[in-house]
Amino acid sequence: MTWEVLSMIGTIAFAISGAIIAMEEEYDILGVYILGIVTAFGGGAIRNLLIGVPVSALWEQGMFFQVALLSITAVFLFPHNLLKHWKRWGNIFDAMGLAAFAIQGAIYAVEMNHPLSAVIVAAVLTGSGGGIIRDLLAGRKPLVLRSEIYAVWAILAGFAVGLGLASDPWQLYLLFLITTALRILSYIYKWRLPFKSIHSAESGT
Image 1 (tube, rainbow, N blue to C red):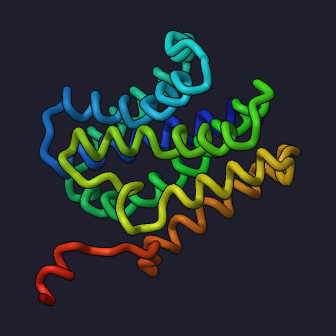
Image 2: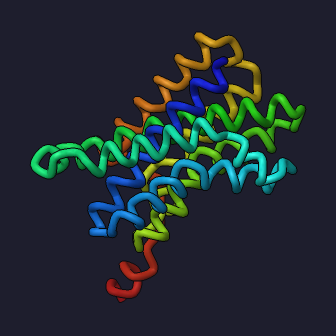
């Protein structure tokens, strides 16, 4: 049950996130639907490829595709004057999608009896894979590859699930709330991982 709930939350959140970014980039209606669907299901497809699950298993999630399409349609039909305010919510939906799919991916790997390393990889790829594809299709630098803290929260969620620290439904939902909150806080307060810029070094010489 927990797996289905997290899958539903992640699907809706990432579908909306992809649709909002597509509209920010002024994509047409087809582009909005494509970016929304790719964001919602891209991470799962990448995860399945790496942990040995047929990608075709995604097509068995008919209800999730319907929910994603309905979510994208709702966002596209949202009044333009109110949609401007929805853009501020894009990062919140992205954080919810990251948390839900990271935990869902970790649960998936644990149920297949994969080692901790595979659980963490499944968490990161499921949580951020769709966002990476979305950003690349939108012509943006993927968040996960920048100094901004993003995938770290998926890694921590993977550790918690893989080590058995979060296994009961209430623990998984609490982990979802914590991961979402950390991602939002890292965005608001601009927490960064250490990075080194070659350009700044060259300009100083």
